[in-house]
Length: 225
Length: 219
Image (cartoon, rainbow over all chains, first blue to last red; front, side, top):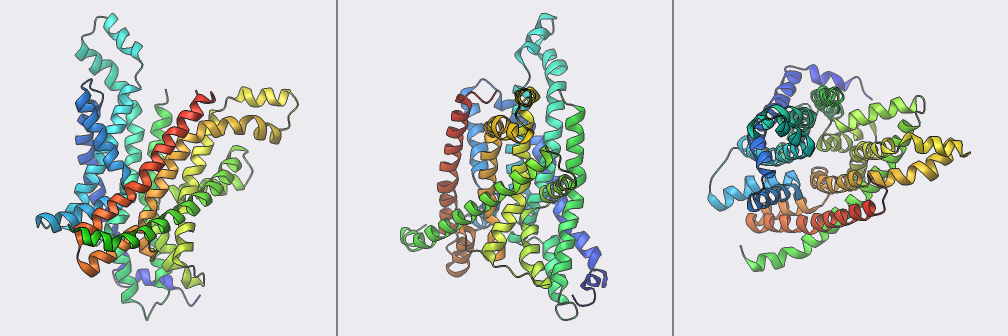
């Protein structure tokens, strides 16, 4: 190895630029996650409904989203939409929408799972104590569902963050794109830049996701039933 | 959308689908092997190796496949390790999937009640024999749903291998969009071919899970 290609990271504003690129990715992930929570909660509740048609439609939505790789969803949404309708979305917005569609489906399924995991006797005991259905929901079902849901939802955040690595492929200038720019710009001074830049990006993603997955594990242990 | 375009594109997509399946199969085999070793090392609490396994699982689970592949394909050659795109794709899938498989197997092993091991030991089995003949068969059944979920996950994850120039379905679709501008047809075929691959696998997985449950191992 020639003398430290690592230095390329500290040339000019390179490292700050990488962090900026990571922030672009994180920002989209967090915004999509927030939207997914807002939309996924009602979706999950509706998935437990007794209405056959509602259940079928939501189940169909979930499976349709799940069966395809997220990259394919991104491509279809970003390229096809423009091609067919002429609507021209920025890649950032397209990524946000696709992640929200996907996140809502996943979140909805988690919510559904958390609700259906509540044993029947919890409801029956609530009614036996004279609680109204709305009170059973608020004081018996909701608190227990949230304990089950929280670790899984936090885990979904890490999946969302990891999935942002795909958006470079529809042209978002995020951390990988910035990395490529740095490598190309320094091709002659630092021929080994690729090793260090990609190792750094690997580490940055790890540093972004590791605390979140740790949080999910801690929550899971704390709320273990 | 035009039918003639479909007819023209079909052979290339069929070839790419086989390439996707091939890379997925190899990746899944490698991931399963890595996962088995990791899970057993952690279950048996082998000193040192168990720490290495823990670090590996965290690194693998908390980074995206795309970033792992970029490092393998563009980073490693700088230290003299030059791998082709197929090798990179398989190694990447093995690295990523290994930790997911390890978690699946480990949860299967943990779900087997300690009484099973204790009974086996009381009957005179050694620890290795107890694992092999008593715990493992039950753990395999218990881990099946997580295992099949991982298989489907890894097949879907192969969709990113075009970034290391592996000619999979996405690669072909991008190619046709770029050269002919038949975006609608190219993407339609992309979706159809992924459905053709993933749907039978999910149906097979569901059937396998039912079978395993009927075997009476699962709770």
